[in-house]
Length: 321
Image (cartoon, rainbow, N blue to C red; front, side, top):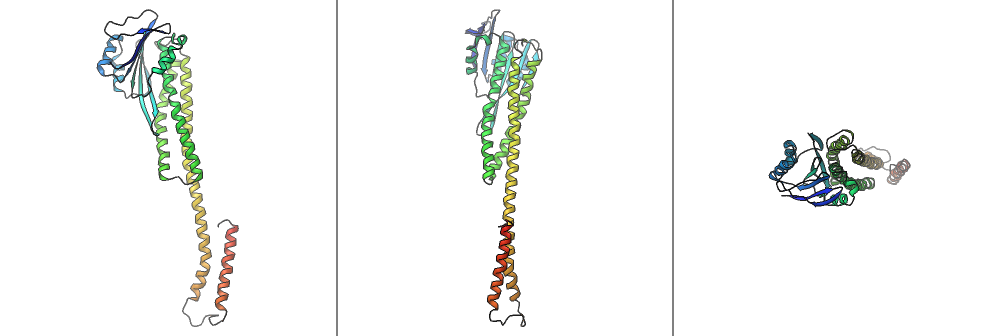
């Protein structure tokens, strides 16, 4: 079987490894078993279905591995789905963790998640006082573990957004950088679709009376809900920041283009003076004033220079040049 770990716990302490052979797992009155599987096949899940009486619909969901975060009740059994996330080259890759919870068992089924529960299990085993709460506290720890994995993703994207924000203020954004902005925005929109149901899952576990969830354990889920809300707030802030980076980049680009347009218009106005004068004296008429004046050429050049200099000074004072 694709079992990563399977252990029996009593009073928050690991007492022995669990045997999953038919009829090989006997639990005492104060014991529960935590079984972790990674991408099991149908035969393996059907074995656990028979052993613990898992609901067939929940088993089907765990096999399909295309579920949104949710909590479902099947008699005295609780079935929860959480979506894991990992950042790979500015692309958020998602996985799933399915959790079957009964009074005496916790069965976790992971699909596509790079973060194993080995570290989580070690942390819980180091705190017997908390693990003593039983299977419902393990469910809280798993959800908290999944939500904590969201924080590095948000922090990495925040650093990228701050870098692009400074880049937009310093120079023009290239086509690749604009495409990067829209890619990050698209990733955040998809991430936000996951966070909403995750918050709902934590809120339900905190507020509703559900099977396998003791009243003294329910407040722990409030912490998970708070963490999800903080991530949601940061994701919404990042989406707004990305939109503002794009808008600021457009405004600065328009401002730079406007400055260039003003400079071109000013130089065109200055060059229009000699062009007009040369055009007038280039006309083929026999009788034109000052055509035979000895100093006419120098007078025209002087007049052109004075007018161009005057226009240059006016445009300079107006900050067009």
